[in-house]
Amino acid sequence: MLLENLSPRSTVLSPELGRSLTFDREGRLLIYFRDGETFKRSLGGEVHLRFRRGSRQRRRLDTEEGLEIMGEAYAVAREARPWASHQLERRLDEEILRWSAADLESERRRFAAVYKPISILPPDQYLAVVLQATEGCTWNACTFCNFYMDRPFFVKEPEEFERHVVGVKDLLGKGMLLRRGIFLADGNALALSNRRLMPLLDIAAKELPDRKLYGFIDLFSGERRRPEDWRELAERGLDRVYIGMETGLDEPTSQARPRSSRLL
Ligand code: SF4
Image 1 (cartoon, rainbow, N blue to C red):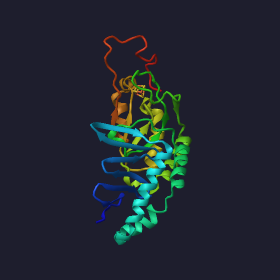
Image 2: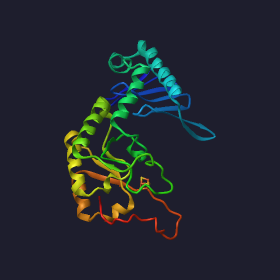
Image 3: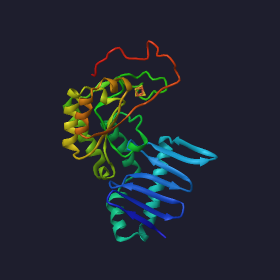
Image 4: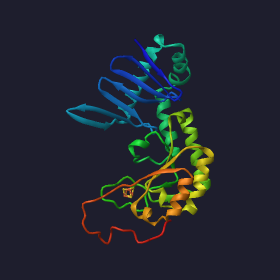
């Protein structure tokens, strides 16, 4: 028996016990569950497999394997169509079954045109709209972190940021319905002074109104911001910040603190 869950944000169908598929409202596969294996497709087109064999295991599929799994998942959706309700039938025809493996592959290129790789997000922000106000991390020296080794720190000017936000909206399309707040990336966009940050937040609020803001911050920049700066950010919707912690070293070394004591 085909089970369906059709919410305004997503489409879930389960044609048999132990098999289910979740799509965004653009019809892009998000999650394919198959007999204890969970395949998650990122917006950037990567497919990650999770399963339990003794302990919990995970790995990223290579491109060929990823496309094979995508093909299998869409074939399962196609085979379920004869048993679909009228509403699911419409979603299958208008959103889901229009995707081919080649289209999903071209999504990867669309993503790369808008974003630098999204290296990491806090687990509760996986469904945020990620906006890269900055790229990289000003500090980039925590020994446990190599997320931004591939890029220098870079601040987008307001015009460039606006193009980025418009590009993100275009990429997400109706997939935006599934997304909650805004995560201001990359590693520490909040290292910017309020003077530089506010015009970017104004653009984010204009293009994506009424969404709470979240972001990473490095410890040093957090200390430098005055309470009134934090209040101003909170009034603009900043709801929570996330800090990466490193410990195990009793004494700070000469390398353990950036020289500048000012925000950027
Ligand atoms: S501050 Fe954060 S992003 Fe930067 S190096 Fe440390 S953990 Fe990584």
